Image 1 (cartoon, rainbow, N blue to C red):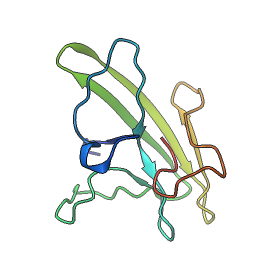
Image 2: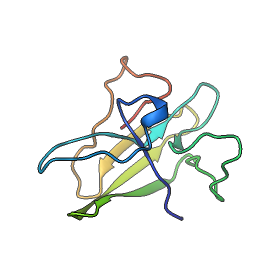
Image 3: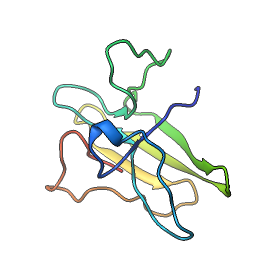
Length: 119
């Protein structure tokens, strides 16, 4: 899959793709996956009508999907991780973990915004 830009969490949509300055050891969140009513889980990226990433951003059910995330800048080493997502059909339940085996950060059950269900 080709690279795509992810949205910074906690920012207005108009600024969600802008570069931000990160201090050493500062943590920020990216919106990685979203579930909208009546649809499949998909990768969060640009939503303009004229934007076509050239591939499907929906996650097929009952498959393991590895999403490689990289954050880079002009004056810092690139930070990378791999997020493993498995969507269970037909209910659409998702399990997330980092490729190193640790749990991935996700919104708690019952407190999930339909547009930003996992980060």
